[in-house]
Image 1 (cartoon, chains in turn green, cyan):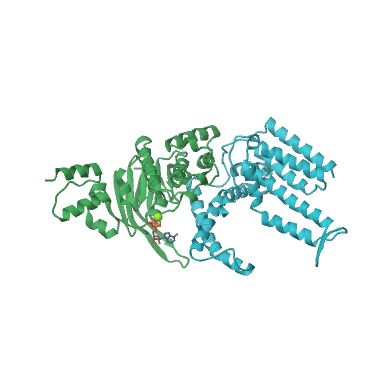
Image 2 (image 1 turned 60 degrees about the vertical axis):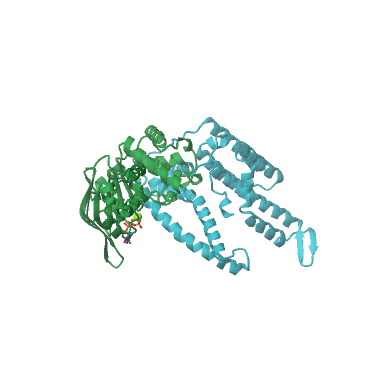
Length: 276
Length: 264
Ligand SMILES: Nc1ncnc2c1ncn2[C@@H]1O[C@H](COP(=O)(O)OP(=O)(O)OP(=O)(O)O)[C@@H](O)[C@H]1O
Ligand SMILES: [Mg+2]
C-alpha cells in the first residue's frame, strides 16, 4: 500500500480554540500504480485530505502512512514530500521562478541533488509533459494549461511515486483541461506513478481505477467508477453532477429501458444501437 | 495599459550581455549607479550614453523596450524637470513671463536631473531585462554570502527578492483586470482632483491586496510541498564562473569610470 489512511480525523482549530472537523474517520487505501479519483462537492474535505498525503497537515486522530512512512514523524517530512508530490489549483500561485527550467529545478535543489542530475531530471520532466520547447521561457507568458504542465514537471523532477492533483484542472479552459488529464493518464500508465485526482467534475474520473466520494468529511462510497456512478441515490445526496453518459443511462432506465452501464461514449452508442 | 509596464521583467535572449555572469552585471550596475551622480560635464554624459548604447547593442534588447522602461516613469522625470526648472534661481534669465522666471542654471540643472533619472532607469532595466530573477538572487546570495556567518539571512532575503520579481507581471496583470472590472462597474480613475483620484484607487488596491495575500499563502504551501526547507543543503542549478567576457565588461566599466573622473 502506498497510501494508507486509517481512521483519520482532521480538525481546523479556530482562534477561539473551537474544533471543526473537516475529516471524520476516513479510511482510504491506495495501491502503488493506481489511479484514484476523490470526488466531493465544495467543503467536503478533499483539499484537507490532499494536504494530509503531502504532510502539509497531520491528522488530529488516526494515522496516515505514505509508502510506509508515518506523516506524524517530523523526520520523515522531506522523504514523504519527495514521495508524494502535489499539483495545486491555481497555476499562477505555484511557480516560483521566472524561467521554466529554473522552476522545475526548485524541488531537486531543495533536496540537494547534484547539478548534473538536476539537468537530467529537467530534460526528463519536460519531455514527459511535452514542453521541451519551453525550457527557457518565462512562465507568465504561457497559457494556464501550459503553466500546469510546468507545475507537473516541477513535481516530476523530484521523482515522486505519487502525485496528488488538487483540482488542478479547475481553472483551465477545455483544451488545457484535456491536456492535463491526458498527462495524468500517461504518468500513470507509462511512468507507473500513482495518481490521486481530486475534483468535483465526475467526468474527469474516466481514467481512474477507483473513485472515492467524500461528503461532509466522510467517505460515503468507494469502488469502481461504473459501480459508484450508477448508484444514483448516493450521487444525488452529494449534489455532484453526473457525467453526460451516466445521466442519459439513468434517464433511459427511468423510462424502463434496460441498458448496459458504461461511462464510455463508444460503448454507450453501441448499447443504444443494440436496443430494439 | 498598466500590464504593459516592463520594469523588472526579464527578456531571455542569447547575447553577450545575457551571458555575462550575474555577479558581474550586479557589480557593474552598482558601480554605474554611484558614478552617475559623479558626472558633471557633457563629455561625461556622452561617454555614459555611449556606454549604455553599447550595452543595449550587445544585449539584443530592442530599443523600443528601453524606451518603454523610461515611459513607465515619465511622470517622475517630468515632475523632476519642472521642479528644477521653475524653482532653481540663477543669474542669467532666459525667459520671463509674469511671475515665472526661468534661469539658465535652472534649465541646465533640470536637464541634468532628468537625464540622470533616464540613465538610472536604463541602467537598472538593462540589468533586469538581461538577467533572470534567479540569476540576480543567486548573485546576491553569493556576493553577500560572507554575511551568513554574521547570521544575516542572506538566502531568505535573496529568495524574497526573486519571488517579488516573479510576481510583478502576475500582479500587474491582475491590477489591469481589476481596473477593467471596476471601470465596468462605473468607477473612474483618471478624472477629478487629487483626493478623488486617490479615493478612486481604493477599489483597486483593496482587492489587489486581498489577492496578493491569498497568492502568498498558496505559494508558501506550494514551496513547502516541493520540499523547501530553507537554504541549508540546497544545491544550485547553475554554477557561476567568471569568464573572459566578464573581464571585458569590467575593463570597459573601468574605462568609463576613468572617463567620468577625468571629464569632471
Ligand atoms: N484553513 C482553514 N481553517 C478553518 N477551516 C477550514 C480551513 N480550510 C478548510 N476549512 C473547512 O474545512 C472543510 C473542508 O475544506 P476543504 O478545503 O478540505 O474542502 P474541499 O473539498 O477541498 O472544498 P473545495 O471544493 O472548495 O476546494 C470546509 O468546511 C472548510 O470550511
Ligand atoms: Mg479544495
